[in-house]
Length: 383
Image 1 (cartoon, rainbow, N blue to C red):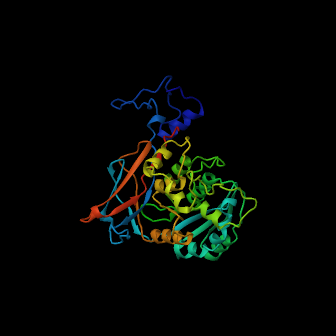
Image 2 (image 1 turned 60 degrees about the vertical axis):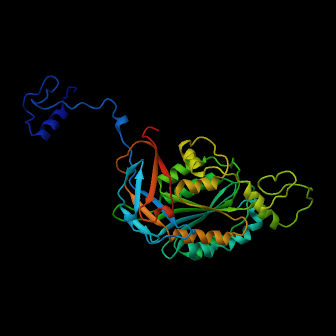
Image 3 (image 1 turned 30 degrees about the vertical axis):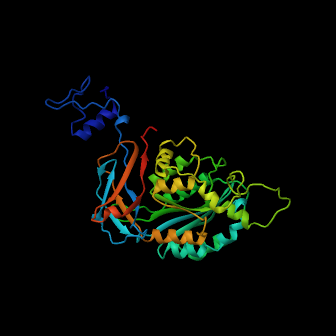
């Protein structure tokens, strides 16, 4: 310990109750007999542990017929974080109020189906928000426009959606997602003692394998933040092929020009069905985990599906007989019939990827399909 002099000696002695007029030591202060000397850690920063205050995970349970199962109790669920069993601090079935960001693509590519989208406002307010929810509306193409801030007024939400206008052909999807996650991060989050709002990002955008080069943000970065902020992502995939088929003919049109977001195989015509069949059968869960762990690498293919899988949500494509209205209605029905489990992580504070597993403990558990968020990434303090 360095020598202490001047007024600091007086302050130190006054605090310890020793007279300032006494004899001060001329060297380092010796330790008291029998008291172990406390040395600072060699690497204090390396020993700092990062913790997550509260983890919320939406859990959807369906039976073998695909129907929602709504008769489970907290005791029927087992949650582990990196293999360590966790204590559920909050349990709810569809009742916690929502904070919702509605993120809608307005690029020129989907202009032919914008009239349909403009009519969906009442579905968002009645089916998704519910009586206790709040929502905000954001539009994006090669720019991002906050069209309506958070409000509980359904008329304002419906009006913002009804006024959507077509923009340029660009699509800053990942940047728009980052804005939505940031907006939701500021909404009230619950504590173990008091439930907060469920944070939901609902994306209505082109279902494409495009790399979205217009975006500055990477998908993995956005998903990592969404997981840490307890944001669940749902998405409605718009068919560019359907938009092209509904568009007014434009002259001149070159013969045999493929339409849609992906080229059709030689000798075939692009249709909504053929476009869907070429999406590929990748392992979405593995892709979601990889994207979060490798945030600086580019994710190619099925970004909406990966985003939903990474956060416990679902992606619904508007191919075949599923309309935009039906997709939104399905999402609303799920949000108000799913379980919310919350826990404060214990027994596993290590940085890196944390795997969440949710299992149902009941006699018929083998016949139930459980969907929950797969995990979250906890960065080290120096990263």
